Figure 1 (cartoon, rainbow, N blue to C red):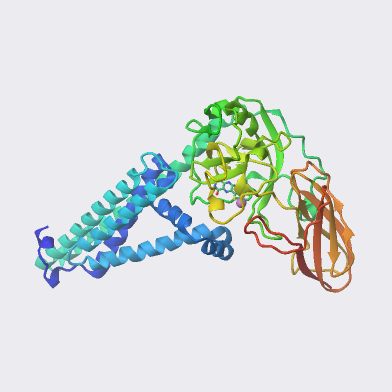
Figure 2: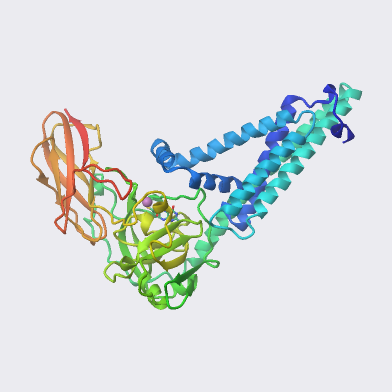
Length: 523
Ligand SMILES: Nc1nc2c(c(=O)[nH]1)N[C@H]1C(S)=C(S)[C@@H](COP(=O)(O)O)O[C@H]1N2
Ligand SMILES: [Mo]
């Protein structure tokens, strides 16, 4: 101990690998301890995830777009891995600098603890007790670093007296300490992770009783899809439903703790809990949800039967005051969206607060305990998951998450179509070829889908049985295809008479336009 506070002679420097190992294990313990505590207070308060989430929110849009384009659904994995690499380098460097004295390592741990504390404290979710997690990290990091440091210095000191036996025995002591720390950190991290997910599973199970629709959605007729030809099945299985999240970790919210507060330009503030919602007459609606980030030919859309209550009934209980323009919804993870008040109040629209999809309570990934679903609007402007707060307000008063980042306030889903069969660049046999795909024009419904081979005439396709105007519709057509390489194009016409525009536009700011075209070869 005294040895460390005095300037130590060169002989007492820790071996480089020992010092680096102490640094890495201390940091791993810090992260694991924080993650474990976060399992109890709220998983997004995990220092690692909080720093990652802050990084996402601070990322400029162009870089975010690049990341999504380059890494797709793995963008967040790449971010987490990148953070792990940076931290590992920092830990190795901190260890390497601490061979004579533990001060540099201590300083790095304190610095990282401070960053984590700031990230957790400034998260919009402001998890109560959230600051316990960086505190746990800091404590674990400092204690483990110093314990390992002492074990290692001890082995150095003893080693100078008894070159052989003492050296190996104390080396074993250090390795034992290091090994225990590694195992302990691993257990803490895994324990935290599994506790967090079991808690949410318990919440879902508890909610499983009595989700019965007073007004069920009509059954899906056979012939509503052409899945045998390669289109999606009409209803998307919950586990396969597309997903878009800004949060790194799925928020784990228990139904018992959840409440929804409705306030702002209303006559009285109302608050609902899960059983309030569950015990109301529930309505079920089959809706195709679409993401504004869906590129031409993309797969960011899915269909489910959502069970819940009418949002406008909840608003009616609060009493909307004149002058209100948007329902500004906030998620437990801090995400926000703005939905036009006239859309939410429109009795023909069917805007919902949903608690179940396809006959099961919402999966945590899709917003358990409750989310919004509004037919005909892109998800970013209407479909807030884990929603806990509805503020009836004006557009100038509050700016939603994606609107702050350059996306449009007004976000009706655009009439679109996609080719699923044949696949792009597929080679098939010349002669009769079946092409098939999907089209969607929520709130209006699909009237017609036409298909064109090369620069030939537009051919009418056969459509699947229409389920309702808020869902996709499948098309198919048999083409006579000569040998050679061909271009296939499709376009939809909706029931308002609008023909899908050929003009290409990107997804920003209000959704992509253009025809889906692909090439294939017939032999
Ligand atoms: N809390 C929260 N709600 C959210 C989002 C989000 O990132 N966080 N993404 C929105 C977007 S962009 C879309 S398209 C839909 C996707 O819903 P899903 O993930 O259930 O398919 O949710 C919306 N609701
Ligand atoms: Mo989206």
